[in-house]
Image (tube, rainbow, N blue to C red; front, side, top):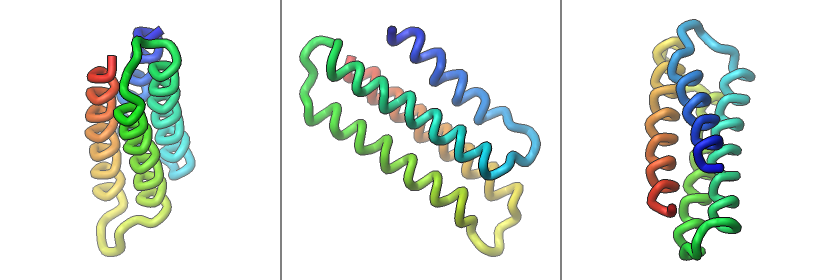
Length: 111
């Protein structure tokens, strides 16, 4: 199960990384929601189906996922003034990929 979900997550990261043209805000929001939803679902699956893991550790990872989603959606909706749009959204995508990879590492540590 982890292998299949891991492939979905990495496909989502790959797609987010390789957007070459300026994506619509709606598409970025959908990508962010997809990735965060998959990461959150993986945590729920670990809670229910894996060996006993400390509930506090799983809760911390889930909280990080929700904070990431909230932060990224706010950044898409309210870009920084004075910064060129292309550079801003390129930085946003890079930040999203970096934070997502950190959360994937945290999920691996739970296994």
